[in-house]
Figure (cartoon, helix red, strand yellow):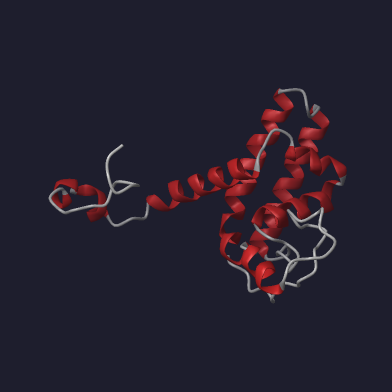
Length: 166
C-alpha cells in the first residue's frame, strides 16, 4: 500500500506541519528528509481505525454532537474505501500518512474534519498506529520465534540502553 511519490518540493506547503514562522521553505534536502509518507502509508488503515475511536471519545466528551459524529464516521469510512481502492493517495505536499488523511477528511467535511485534532497529539497518533500495526503483524511471525523461548535463553542479548546499569 506504499505509494510511489515524486520528489518533494522545497517550498512550504499548506499541509506542512512545521516552519510557519519562517519566511522561506527548507532546503530541498531537508524537505525530502522530513517526508515519511512513502514509508508510513501502510499505516493508513490503522490511523483511520484510531480516528474512528477518537471521534467516539470526542462525542462522549460532548465535543461532537450525534449528527457530527455520524458525519465524521461516514467520512472516515469513505476515506478508508478510497484509500483501499487507490482513489485517494498522498500528494507531494503531504509530509506523512496523518497529514494525507487529515487532508482527505477536510476535503470531505470542511471545518468539521478539523475537530478530530482535539485532544490528540501527533506523537500519540504515531504510537497508536504503530502499536495497531505491530499487533496485526505479530500474528504472522514464524511460530519458532515465540514457541520456544528457552531455545534462545543462553544467547547474549543487548538489553541495556546505557553501558552500565542505572
